[in-house]
Length: 171
Image: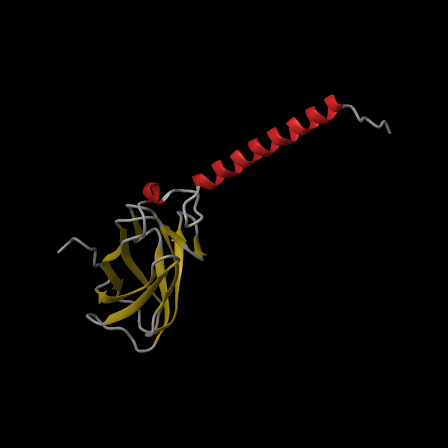
């Protein structure tokens, strides 16, 4: 080991240490400045602030006697991004979220609700599976669904049971 005690070396080392501290601190400040308070990495302005959610066109096609049913609806969002993390119902044992593809159907734990966009549950795509009805559904009945979101809490919606061939927007 070589001992260096020269003034020039100490001054160079001190300058290097100060420069590293300044540059490192600037990088930390820059990184902190890019994330929003929600930790999403986007600012409140870019994500649209808090989510403003509403539910449109909810329906359940009449299921076979004693069978499971599918549920469809649209979650509209006029604000910042959120995520649907759970769906429950006091009138059913379980409600699960599923995503369909041409060859399969898979259960999902959560679904994104984009900022200034919509999450659509529709035939042939993302849908709810409702199992273990408390009482057999009939046309005109309503089933309460409680939609729980990561940021916005829970929204309760009454979903009508419609004829099997029902499509929203068609008479």
